[in-house]
Amino acid sequence: AQSVTQPDIHITVSEGASLELRCNYSYGATPYLFWYVQSPGQGLQLLLKYFSGDTLVQGIKGFEAEFKRSQSSFNLRKPSVHWSDAAEYFCAVGAQGGGADGLTFGKGTHLIIQP
Amino acid sequence: DTAVSQTPKYLVTQMGNDKSIKCEQNLGHDTMYWYKQDSKKFLKIMFSYNNKELIINETVPNRFSPKSPDKAHLNLHINSLELGDSAVYFCASSHTGLGGYTFGSGTRLTVV
Figure 1 (cartoon, rainbow over the protein chains, first blue to last red):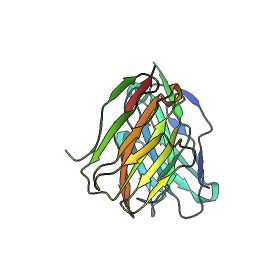
Figure 2 (figure 1 turned 90 degrees about the vertical axis):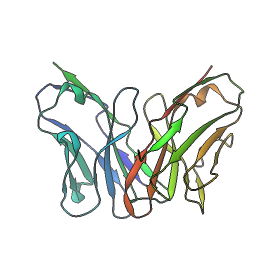
Figure 3 (figure 1 turned 30 degrees about the vertical axis):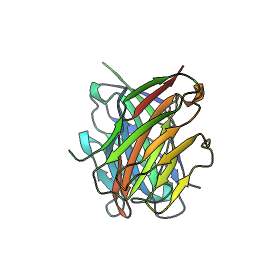
Figure 4 (figure 1 turned 180 degrees about the horizontal axis):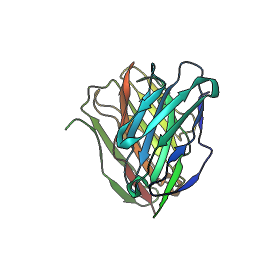
């Protein structure tokens, strides 16, 4: 069965500091990996996705993620966070598109930005 | 605008009632899903449906039933609502073998 682990429930970062959110996955086939962000009371916005090719993926809002097959990881990074980045971040694994299983999500990491 | 749209955005109802949440996508996707986000923000798939096959997560009570009048719609009907059904429900769609998944903005269901 596929699964995603986000080991950090909460992370606090100062504005302007760098950020790394961890994600580890378990998936039987070639993993397709996603990061979503959810602001309070809002829906899910796709930050970036990895299907194949270059293991360093660029996303929106200055985020990037690196796929490391040997470590079964897909960590999200940003060089300098802004107060507007405060939100819940979800890593997910699934088929490239379609498929009965859809996406399996991690439990999320709540990002707090200190002034 | 191309999107996945859900209605209503908020739904407050009493225990024991029956309610429906509607979902429509105009992206031409062939698979649609319902996810439940609980009070701890955990997202879990409830159903997937692609015109040919409905896959039900075995943990979903049979009070929940998806109904798809056509390829672009997947509505969620809930019978005999319980307090524990209070959650945010997200509809999503995708296309087999292509791209990612697009989510609706969610429906916050509160059962009182």
